[in-house]
Image (cartoon, rainbow, N blue to C red):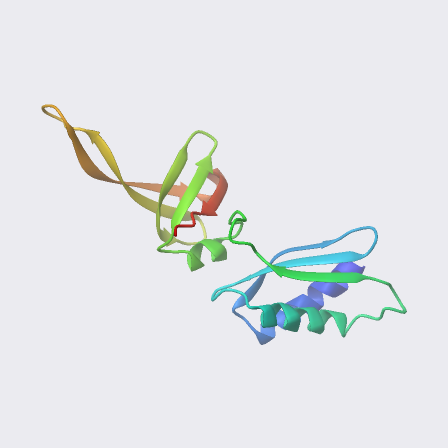
Length: 153
């Protein structure tokens, strides 16, 4: 029951700032509420505070005691939703499927799949030596076991 209330309050907060979206919402047996959010333009501390206040100020501690934690999806966390892939177009991803691993630039993402591209060194078709070739892969979300943004400095 508490989880449903919190979900409705979070949805209302996201309507007020529609660049934010919910990644996960968990309520444990001790009524510890943990909300992880992301945003099309990133998530600021003030975004977390706004969502936290929108929820906390509309729950009654006398009715149910609770603790609330609102955080943003960390940069090292795997991508879980198509909307997260879309906001990372142009960035380098490491993607694992059941049978293979890919590392490439995220060229496109829609509701069904992503497109990665990268350069690889392969043996020349004729003669000795190697040549650089452009490679790409179209990966449906259903095939992706894990995908993370590769952080480069």
